[in-house]
Amino acid sequence: GLAQNPERLIDFKSDQQIRPRGLVSAGDHLAIGTMPDLGQLGGVFALYDTARGELVHSERNLIEDESIVALAYRDGVVYGSTSIYGGQSATPPTQPEATVFAWSVADRELLWETAAIPGAASINAVALDDDDRLWGVSGDRLVALDRDGDVVEEVSLGSNTGSSGDLVYNGVDGLLYVTPANRRLISVDPETLTVEVHREGSSHHLAAHSSG
Image (cartoon, rainbow, N blue to C red; front, side):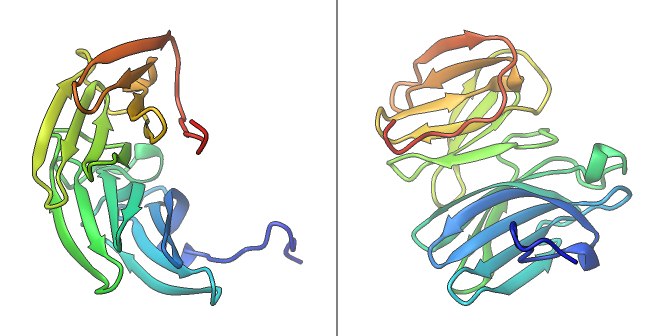
């Protein structure tokens, strides 16, 4: 039989999904974004009610033919970013570029979506700073959007044309930590846009502890 620990809570096999790529606590819910299986396009966006222990919303192709790869949350709104690819990047994409979007938990509807980084195949990470700007990274390109989806900052971190990279905001020191193209670890001051290199070489997943 199935193992009890860890316990299986949700299964998106009926929607031909291979793995969750974005997870974020969203008030009383867990918001989930997924990537489809080999040969498929179009991820699922879902909400799991953690108190009731049940899936309360599940929607494939919230963003048409794009996987949902990163999520953030604030004040009743889930923000996310996408990739034009499906599982193993084996299926030719139908969309020209990745997007950033906002979704209302209360109204269960998409508020806006935008191609914040023109031509980017994937926007692999998003993070909110203390001024309610939503930052996204794709390779060596970093952008900030306001809560209406308008791009308010653009930062070039190099010349890499890929779309990999991770991003996290540290609320203690007020800095963004970024791994542009997964090739180094840097910090960016969101006010001055000053960049400091902390590590050269392969750098991938990031998390910021509440202690800083």
